[in-house]
Amino acid sequence: MEPIRILIADDDPGMRTVLRMLIRKSEGYALVGEAENGEQLMELYERLRPEVVLMDVEMPGLTGMECAHRIQDRNPRTVLVFATAHEQYMKSAFEVYAFDYLVKPFRNERALNTLRLIRERLRGANVEERPIQASGGASAGRMMLKHRDGISFVDLNAIMLIQREERATVLYLSDGSRYVTGDSLQDMEERLPADLFFRTHKGYIVNLNFIDSISPYGRWTYIVKLRGTALDALITHDRFEALQQRFS
Image (cartoon, rainbow, N blue to C red):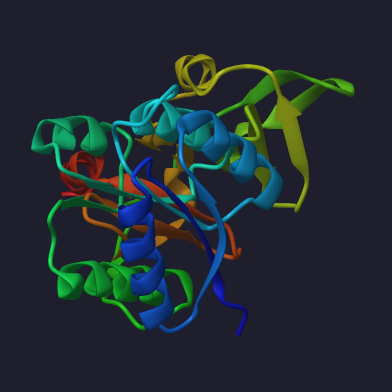
């Protein structure tokens, strides 16, 4: 199994040494790069595309939070972990759906446990699944979609997932086709019928009829598995509660 690619960022060389040692102690990880400021972090992220970013909040230039927002717009599945001496940023970390928030000085065991949980989530360890049973099916018409190749008319019932990807919005259909559009996820949400589609996360909209199960993923997030496909999506804790109410 391929090791998990992880990138670290902290302006303190001593802390980078600590993080480096923790990663060496963690099975299944490969440290692909180190950054000492926000601009360097984003340059390394674009070039190396790590699966996990472990970073400080306060760094020269771009802050950790600013980097987190940019990373999520490129790939919302990137696992973000903050390691900082400042507790006041925890609410902001919640808003970017960080996997965890480590407050310095943290115990090594605490950080190693976080890395273990990430490994289990990313490499398919067994976790409790919560099936979502839909009562009946929704129906809808078609949507005109402008994309880089022109205009398509898409059957709404065939759209399984809409997500942010590489600063664009991507639609995945049940026949395996994929459309890329410049419309924002907010624009798409406003055009879609609310009885069929559900915004699970700032980076995802799912077709309710394709939801198969939901499993824990991070500190504030779950993962939504879709029926008949390897595609999945993230859902935040508050949106999961809203989804439960919808099906109750």
